[in-house]
Length: 184
Length: 184
DNA sequence: GACTCCTTGTAGCAACTGCTACATGGTATG
DNA sequence: CATACCATGTAGCAGTTGCTACAAGGAGTC
Image (cartoon, rainbow over all chains, first blue to last red):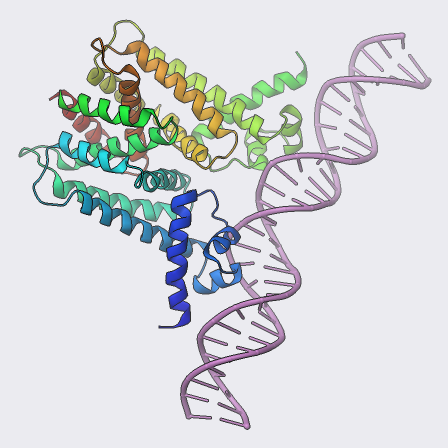
């Protein structure tokens, strides 16, 4: 493996941490290069352009998110929607995963603006979410699995969105209030 | 009233339409000026700086959103959470209001990046949302009104977020699936 | 008519954006 | 030892960003 390929890996790893910490706030080429500990000149030697950098890093982050999600809620016995939501939100509102969800919200907004490469990233990650939910969803025959999966994702993402712009104190109360709504 | 003050009003009105149509994608000073039909030089004569422009326009948009929300779901009889969510999502996923919600998601993401003046805007709008929900919420004594209100907002916003990055076809199915989740 | 203030245009600044041309030292292969 | 390719630095490009200095026309006031 060439130095170039090795460095790609190192840079991706470091920038994953950078994005998870700072979101999309510091993502100019020079800022990314500094965060990765290389010169901007070299960043564009390792990657074709800025979009390729971000795509690679986001793929890395999405992969880790997917891994952790599947680890936290394995695909063993299907869960009823309310229970799946409860388990998922328990996990995504935890201190470790909040920054993943925060970044996800930012990426969705960037995709809404049409900014490359975010639309493609969002399509791919969203597809992964759908499959993840579908594989764990216990629904009666004839129910709308796709619609229900989308609704579950919406609830989980909605919690993340409100979490971003709220006091830390409200988040757990919001989650448990939601749990009440879904089970009564 | 001076020409300057009149022009402020005209510009705010036009830019509200611009933001609702294009989101935050075209918000450089020169792009805003062009959308408002004035020179960038004059835009900064009417307003102190870019942040003041955006703050004024967003206040205008938030005001209209608030108006329409209160118009669609008047504060007459309190509603149980599930019913309030159903009514609210019915409204916010409609063709007219989707662009409000889309812009809202973008603004929250911008606030997450710390970009002025979005954090202040988000705090204000979110406060308005909370009061709006609280005024329409029928909850048993002793329940967590704040937490429940936040949860309801999360569900509504989550639908908007997923709506942004989905086919048009999935949105109504998602809404009705959610309705099922909340009422069984 | 001189003076002042409101309004508007022209021109431009310094900083930053993504990206590239060019040179150069190294290392490997013929 | 020569040639070719990999790796890296220096410098800079053209475009965009938010913002400003300066001048000047116009309107009203002394």
